[in-house]
Amino acid sequence: MSFRIDVITIFPEYLAPLRQSLLGKAVERGLVEVGVHDLRQWTDDVHRTVDDAPYGGGAGMVMKPEPWGQALDAVRPAGTRLVVPTPAGEPFTQRMAAAWAAEPGLVFACGRYEGIDQRVADWAADAGPVSEVSIGDYVLAGGESAVLVMVEAVTRLLPGVVGNRESVEYDSHADGLLEGPSYTRPATWRGHEVPPVLLSGDHAAIARWRRAESLRRTASRRPDLLAALPADALTDAERDV
Ligand code: 6GU
Image (cartoon, rainbow, N blue to C red):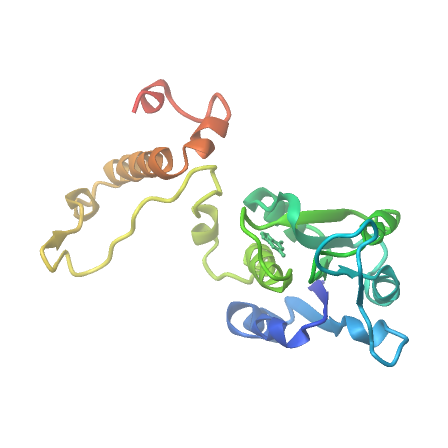
């Protein structure tokens, strides 16, 4: 069974990268199916209107619910998770990506302007899970680039999409820590040396060094991640570093 991804957007050409690179190969190999749909095909007026002024006043435009209702009726399989990218959503995480990768597929609803009439997400929750998610604390013009980010994070976790399972298991965030630095040949480059332990052939020492670098980098760049680790995630010695 392949993982099914549908994206509903007013900028279908923005999603062209879904058919390239790692994901494009997964599509060619039948591991992933992708459908990109122009929301305007579900408009009824000559102007193909998808937005209107907000009730209560204020800046910007809100996406009308009717085209979204028809689009989701046509595109969303019963029970499939609906993902709505929005800067007002809960943070998208590696944990979420892993959970979603275990589902049969995903439908993404890309909002533009000031977002989609809230009743769309509220109504859609009767037919299956709905996730309103943000990819970070900054504002994008629309959800399309966030969908590219989330689809890449999810699909690389699907069985067979990435050749090297280990490279997925040891990624930054897989164990709640950032990955430490990596090196390749030459051993000396422009006066900078590769850390000698990596040339030692002592695999236990290398594993200890990598763990220490991972902790050092996380403490320096993402102290919030260290603080959020479960109580048993660090040894007493590690906690003191
Ligand atoms: Cl998911 N959408 C938009 N429009 N802006 C964002 C975002 C999503 N995540 C962060 N900023």
